[in-house]
Image (cartoon, rainbow, N blue to C red):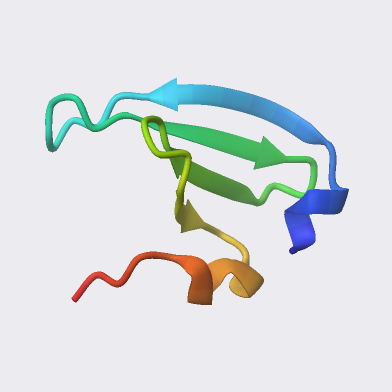
Length: 60
């Protein structure tokens, strides 16, 4: 994964405005890429990296 070798420049908890209680942690890396993780489970739920796309939950 690309972001694993990059320095983290920002990490924050973001409140999901669509559904109360569904917050996520967003990690931004030095190359400008990001990953989003579910706060409760720690699972990857969003990413700007192409190499992560097959690891994301299906939106179907």
